[in-house]
Length: 86
Image 1 (spheres, rainbow, N blue to C red):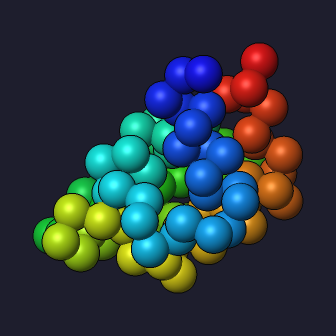
Image 2 (tube, rainbow, N blue to C red; image 1 turned 90 degrees about the vertical axis):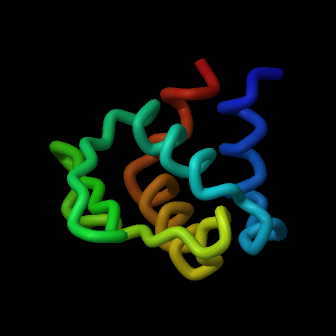
Image 3 (cartoon, rainbow, N blue to C red; image 1 turned 45 degrees about the vertical axis):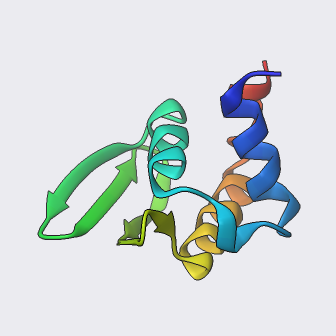
């Protein structure tokens, strides 16, 4: 199983939100086609066809749990996970 699939499954499970690495979450969003722009320590992700904007900030090298939850909700709402699983 690829690293991207493992991270996707960890995010979708909802049980590991506090242990997702910030760089892993960034890599997953990039793989899902999100574009990043940076303002200070805010990494702002957007994608055509996705109404929401994802605003991430690192905390000790990890993603904040509530931000992982937001990413999970977007993946489920727009059914983006299939792009990695295929």
